[in-house]
Length: 292
Image (cartoon, rainbow, N blue to C red; front, side, top):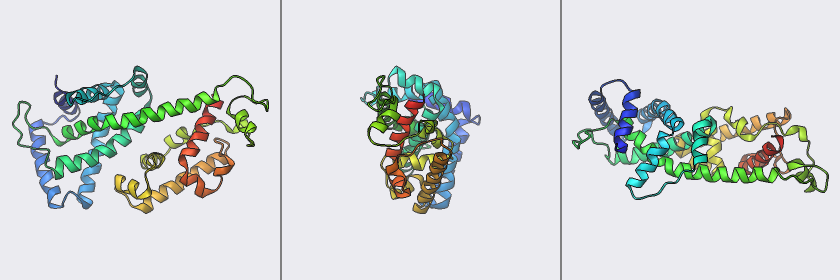
């Protein structure tokens, strides 16, 4: 079965109304959005609806493995090889946090591409008369997400490799010169003062407790995006980005006071904590290895 057919079937199973009627409604909606230049409050409402309505479809496809399979198939149709290891595939099926991480980044990228190609570039055609007929906007958008999955997955897999490398540093069996095992011993040998009881909760677990908007801001920050770039991607103000960073910084410090997470001395200043989230992750990722 062709990739587009499978996507259409997945969407039809979730949206129970008639597909042809859906296409007509979408055509009227696009005309309205075009009148506003695919921007402003009207477009923001449409964009948010697309995000929310597509999320259960995408989440289900990630959990079943069909999204990854269709992404591989779509890449092959364009002469590109997308390789997904059995281990990564199993993780995406079993780990909800991993799926959420990919889902957020995939939707952010897909919404940008969808606006540029499907709407402004008129790539979506309600009068398409090919063998499969016209697709609704949701099917077109899901297809865009499946294509963007390739780039997002590669970045996620690379981060996962680095994460495992950090854990490997914590699993050495020999005692350090200071007589302490694991990362606590390593830090003590390096001149840091540590309290092993503080190694109880990893950074990712604390981040996963936050609202999706905060998770998106922090994950994009970790990936090296500036405040302005994050604001542009999420369609929010720079002030909103800074506010979410500030609030999450407070969450991290509260977690440190509750001895859920340990913060190295170099990161104790608030400015450092906001500006070097990757370092915070490295320390907390390492701490998770020692606490397991």
